[in-house]
Image (cartoon, rainbow, N blue to C red; front, side):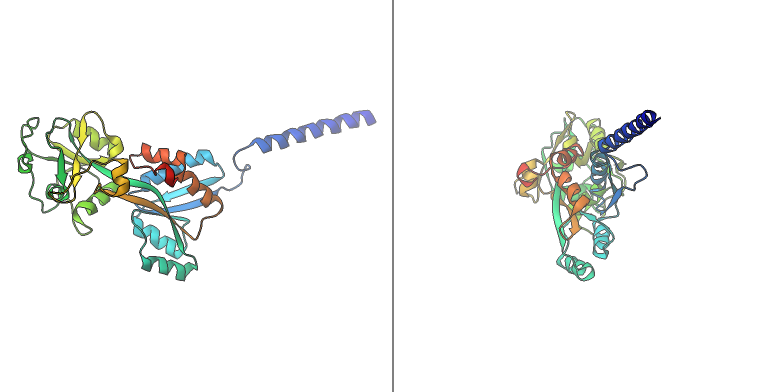
Length: 301
């Protein structure tokens, strides 16, 4: 009987040891355990990129769930000031007044992290003879009160476009890219003219321009194809016009480029710190490039 008892106990011990080893090999949380949630809110320009980061990071750290919402940079900043989010996505820097409100309300100073750069290219069909354009001319093409409706008004003969009419391709009004482009060429109070082809995605814009000789459109520079060309852009007539490149976006010479930020209350710690480190490292920056934004240079990672 004693020998049989020892055998049973040995078998139970082996089962328990195997279960322990199995638990140690799991990468995710224990069954039934809640994930740690990182609340990430703000810029509509960044929301698709932020969602792409969050989805990929769910495979990197299965104990963390990054919950992403848009609403605009101001919405994200207001939530940060209220202390209700972990990370605010911002396509502009916080103002000194906003930072002071955050300190007064939470006792913490907001910390910013540049996570990408945004450079929008202006595309035309590859057979279009136009090579460069100014911000003022873009405003005349896209703006609500603009007067440029034909290619000949830009001093070119677009032979591939039989009608001479400029076909404007844009993004839907709930797109962050739409908002940034609108502000960049018209200012905060300006509105884009009705009657454009307003598409869901950046890739869609480039595809339509590539198949439409009369068209002009804007999208991330990473979406370029052999069917289109990117225009050089000058801030003013007579000034040097620049193509959207990594260098021109980083040094500020390309006029439609800006840094994109993530803000935290005080220095980030724990899961938030690890997430931001991953976003700014090679894996996170590859997602930046894949989504048509400008990744951080190696020295900034």
